[in-house]
Image (cartoon, rainbow, N blue to C red; front, side):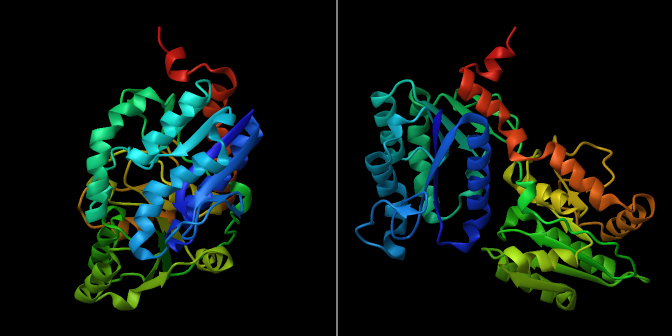
Length: 385
């Protein structure tokens, strides 16, 4: 079978690296499970089919980036990639904008048997889209998403829904390509503790909760030395930096900026604990499928979660759970968690790595999607009495 993965994300923006890596891992897994997989994504100059630019946007630059991305991208994909010749399309949802709906209609009209699978990375998603341009896109989305039922065969969701937009879902969890993630094999001890959070800095990552908790802890008598490494950039950077100054913890917090590859591996190698997103409740989400948590697990670094995650059930020794609310992070409890883990499970890094290899790979996660592509039998409909 032949599939086309459509990811309307620009390769030129450093903040998109995690999404693009996910796309490549999904492509590899689907190729192993379902057949040949091609991929098309975007760039500032034009769409990329594999590594080849298939068209040039007429005008480039910041003022035209949104027009290129939301209008011309789908026109060029339809014209140059011949989506109707594929057995299935796996598309990252760009909102129900007119150009996307036209692309779907053209594909289904030309090839009714081509399965169209829509991945909705976050649902609900309105709270993530707060900028002026995004609010305009949401108006189109409100008007157009009812038409998705005419073209989309199924939706892949990471939040457990059985239906979205009236379309049956295949609920899965996020995965990782374990082979590309180095194990942070170490046996660390001593008083100082190094914590890491990797994120595109936004309010729903809850980093302010970490900072407030760190300030409260460092004021306590007998507090251990702690360093917090914040890796990434985003709209909340200046606010978080100001909060560090206000709380008097600037010496304990290091804003590292964007890192990847060996530079990121080096920061991880000195980390005792990682923090997943602690503010997902601000988006109305109390269940998550965080890519960060899965990467932390593959690296063998224990981590903190605030939301339910079906891959990390209660009782796992390498996961510390905190409330999904606005309370400051209880850093004293986190310190006790690390000390207890070191004492009771000295081989925890290897245990975490094995857990990731057995349960968290993209091949394992995408098997229900590939089975649907191969057989045409939808798991949600099969489950009906």
